[in-house]
Structures are given as structure tokens and as C-alpha cells.
Image (cartoon, rainbow, N blue to C red; front, side):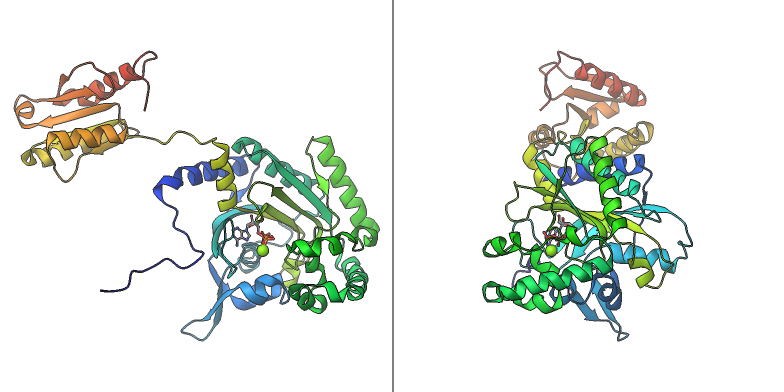
Length: 434
Ligand code: ATP
Ligand code: MG
């Protein structure tokens, strides 16, 4: 016997039972983004490895150990995208969309990182990515954060904490890096293995460590805020004041550094207590230098990415999902001889009433089995297409959740008859749904 094929570890199927929550999340998100003037962009899942190395940084965890990289048949090194910003920046450059233009873009899709799979952390995971390109802020920073805050409200997700920080300019970061390295070297003996490795390559990342044993050391570290240049400080203060003005709650976390190298100035993250260790549900920041670094016209930009699995889990836990949809009509077919005629009627009804959800019994089955399926479908009304009735030019209709009896209608008046029957069943006081 052949071995059973398994999904790849950390790569999940989203099954029909879960898809309602995903679709609700996607619809709310798309509607809100559209209302803020964001346009959707779709970029390839695969890009040249070089793009991610240059954009994200060689010494980040993502590039250093998490990328799915392979050589294609033409000999090029390609990578499954670990995040979307680099690809969007590349798309803006390669499609000649910059030259001082502004773009508000969003994108949804799977990302790939070879991490240790656990609840809320996967190797293929979905992100909604939102990017505002062409504005130096801080007004755009504030509006982007307001958008995120409004989305959680609309979705009914509470208990998220917004943390923000400023990384300043690359120069202020360099200065800070030297001070931080000095501090960490003094405590080298208590650094965990990961942090020892990061000490020379990327010491700021040590502040991002999830190891509880490292937290005390991190708390005692010097703060980047003290090294901010005057302009970055002004930018940050205006952002904070604007957020206060529009009633967005936030905490300043001077140790929020973010894991990708391209960020400068504003960085932020929404964090939940409820998904355990995987607590970041949405993270982002400003990346004013990235586009020029990739060879495009120097263009300031800011963006964030939401972790869809983590947000869908919160959404499901909050129980704020719309009830699953059921068909309006289940069509029972009495006798294989009339199956063709039944489909013909149903297709006619679909043309006449495009919004109606119709489930036609397929694959035969006796009356009892078909009515069992009809009940299970949740449809309020059954249509019965039978040989005898068809011979008389009629079909039968039967409410499925009420005791009221069967009725008949002429085949030629099917659509209005279905409308009337459904309207009657939807009346307040008629049998409750489900
Ligand atoms: P974390 O600190 O949890 O590793 P990150 O800083 O690596 O997150 P980003 O690269 O900023 O995350 O990605 C944005 C969002 O994508 C995160 O806030 C998180 O919700 C989600 N995310 C990141 N990595 C994963 C993953 N492996 N599985 C599921 N969701 C993820
Ligand atoms: Mg990560």
C-alpha cells in the first residue's frame, strides 16, 4: 500500500468549516481599506532571492534562516516570499510607478518562512499587507494606525495593545547600535545562544528576543529614544499627539525594534495577550530608504502586515462571526428520469433569480434520503420535481422547518411562486431559522 500523503509541516489547509471566519475577515478588511482609498495589488509569490537579501537584510532571522530558497531550472536563485513589502517595492520600481507619485496599496496572500511550527506560527501563513508610498508623514503614519484600530473595532476584536516606537534615522540607529553592543558585551556571559550569534551581526534584534530569561537584561538596556535626531523626535512627537487627538490608545515601547532591517522612524505593533507566545497580530513601520536601496527613485513609505491566522483565531474566539449561510431552496428530484428536467428548471430559476441560493439534489437517492439532505442543508424550502407533477405541468413546494403542508405551482410560474413562499417563511413569527 502506498504511504499516505501528508501536508507539509506548518502548512495548513483552510477547511470549509473555517472559511466563514476567513471570508468575514477578508470582506471587512477589503471594505475598510477601500473606504480609506487603498487599492489592491497582486504580486508574485516567487521573487529573486537577491531582492529579499537586499531589502530585508542578510543578518535578519528571515533571510538568515527562514527563507524557502531554490534554484529554478534556468539556474536562477528564487525564493518564496517571506513578506510582501519587498515585492511591492520591486513592482513599483519595475512598473515605473514612482517618479514622485503616491500610492496607497494593499495585498493579501500567503507568505513562507521556515520557522518552528506551533499554534499561531506556521511555515505558510497569510498576511494582509498595507503600504502607503510617497509620503514622509507623520500624518500618513497616524492615518494608517487609525485604519488598523478601526479594523479591530469593526471585527469586534478587543484586548489588543498598540505599541509604537521610533527608530530614528540609519545614523541614529548606528550610534545606538554601538552603545547597545557595549552594554551587551558587558553581559555576554548571560546571553543565550541566539543572542550571542546576533551580538555582532544584528544586536538590535536581541531586544526582540522571546526568551523569558533574556527579559531582565533587555529591560536594563539603553534606550534608542535617547539617540534620536531632532527631526525624528519631532516626527514621533507629532505622531503621538495626532494619535491622542483622535483617541487612539497606544504605549510607547522604547525596545520595539522590529525584525527586518529596512525600517526607520515609526515602528508599531498590535499585540494580544490571548494567543500565548505568538502575540503580534499586526506589525509595521516606516521604510523611507528601502525603495532607493532597491534602485528606485528615493521615495518615503510606511506599511504594516497583519497575520491573518492569528486574527482569524481571535475573531473566532470572540464569537463575532456572521451565521453560516444556508441555501434558500433544496430541490428534491423524484425519479432518475426527471433529473435532466429538474436541472433544466433549476438553471431557469438561477437565470431568473441570480441571488437565490439553490442546492439541487445530485446523485439520486430515495425520497427519505433526499429530505434528510434537505433538512441538513438548512434550507427553509424544498422544491419537489416529480414525474407525475411534471406530467400535470406543476412542481411541488414544501416548507422544511414548518408544519404547513405541501403546495403546487405551475412550472411556468416557478420564480414568483418561490419568491412568495420564501417571503412567507421569512415573516416574523414564522418558524425560527436553524
Ligand atoms: P513574530 O514576532 O511573531 O515572529 P514578525 O515580527 O516576524 O512576528 P512580521 O514579519 O512583522 O512578523 O509579520 C507581520 C505579522 O505576520 C506578524 O505580526 C504576525 O501576526 C504574522 N506572522 C509573522 N510570522 C508568522 C508565522 N510564522 N506564522 C503566522 N503568522 C506570522
Ligand atoms: Mg518572526
